[in-house]
Length: 113
Length: 114
Image (cartoon, rainbow over all chains, first blue to last red; front, side, top):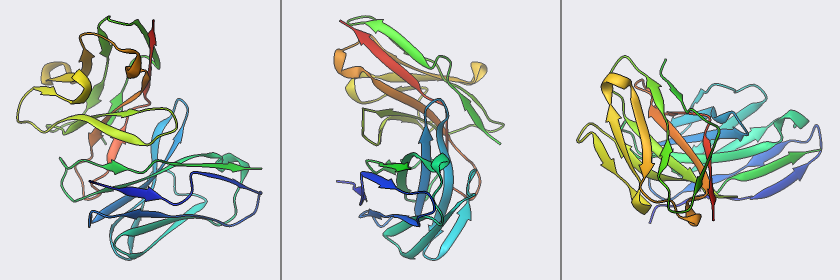
């Protein structure tokens, strides 16, 4: 069965801390994504990666960076966490076609205090 | 750029009643469309998807959706709501560029009254 695993479900961090959110998929998918989910705004794309070491900005990349050193792993980095980054973060992966299903992880709830 | 509009941030139905969740898209080319469901404190899972094979698409848990090109709609329906259907539902369109990303609507929360 398909599996996207996010390492941390709930995190509380202080303003200014560097935060790492890790995501691993076991489906050998080419494409991986980080979305942010906020009430009333749906899911907004932060960054995506279409290959190892390749990345592109999504709709809201400011304040975030990503790393993809291995095909199965895609990390989201908050260089200096701020309170407006308190949110639910969802990692996803997809093989490569427009009709392919995107598979999501369980989500990581981040609170920045 | 493509976009998705979901009418109604909250929909409330009685158990056993028809469920209708609305989704309209904007696209200059035939799209690929998806409905996802999110239960509390979980990620999203696929309900169904339209990939141009048939306009009426059947998904899991008794849900189905009909692609209507003339109305640019892809509404989700279920004949009889169950308490377990209470969740948030997202419509999405597949962006037809090199990104392979999905563009999501803002979501509709379905409440089911006993």
